[in-house]
Length: 386
Image (cartoon, rainbow, N blue to C red; front, side, top):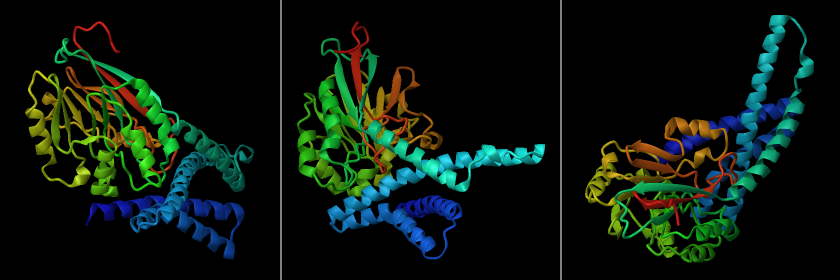
């Protein structure tokens, strides 16, 4: 059984349950029957399948239809996720009140909401959160990290790396969405620019404009990118071609010496289905001279115990810090290292980015997008950054 089939089955099971929950809520609140109930059911089925149909239509080359379906489907996905999360909280509150009524034999109906009031109130609050989420998604924060290391040569001086991650350029992406990212990266003045996966997430309507903006970003020591899972979902050939045209060197299980004291290694995402991926990572890292700073670009924030001794800094992404709270609580179960800078061994670190773009719903809630400035400086340097 393919992983894609498993993903679709799981998606439809969980997402379908959310739609069934909403269908029951609305029917009970507004006493829907007959044609009105059938119409509501049909609309919810259309919205449920819109993200999948967008992917299928895109594969057939119908870009405008794919974009329309993607916007409808993913905006709705964000809406129903927020609505259901809030509704479950209200349901829990009502259960507690009803239980208290039984215990104390009293009528507390006055502090409860009617079914229709719940629908109306939660719709308004969800719309407000969606508006805030769209605002948050378009405002890029700049995070700064300084790593001191005796491996960084005083003669060569500090080196500034700027990390972008999880842009998810695809049907929902357009040049104005990229503008704040370009501005933030330019202001950071990187020596090296890296993309830690999911740069590409499908075919957009404005590829040439996006390519030109990305290609124009200056990075004197080079621009490097690795694959994320979505490069493989979108089509690795197309994704690689786009990334290279954007001016990035793709590191697919490869190492490159950027300067005499710094080696960058990039590994593919497990979505490549390469059975030797872990072995390749270990062999590449072991080949880096111990007196050189070893920078690993790896999409998912997971640490291989056999590689730790050969990593000075790992840069990752993938998790988006959940992107929409409270989804972060579930993400942490699978990726317990969280986000930001983490020590994985003495003088060895992982930095996991919150991501620079959005996947699915074009919003972020309590998980602002970021670009990250990582300054690598000599151990005895008195300055933290340029």
